[in-house]
Length: 68
Figure 1: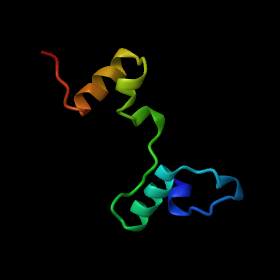
Figure 2 (figure 1 turned 180 degrees about the vertical axis):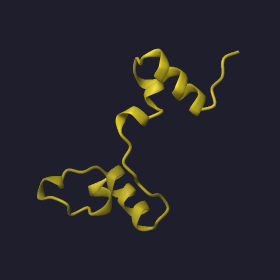
Figure 3 (figure 1 turned 90 degrees about the vertical axis):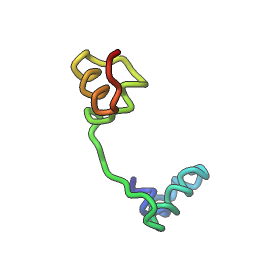
């Protein structure tokens, strides 16, 4: 998030990819806004890792995925 707001954040960031520069541009244009979310609130975890049943149920409902 810091790099998206200030691309000259650190001299070690010379290798930053085009995608991150694109993100910075979109933040400057106010087309997107970035906010910090603790890992316990990342809905995409449902699709990327094994989770306890309670998190699966909570994220599934938050994404609008219902049992048949």
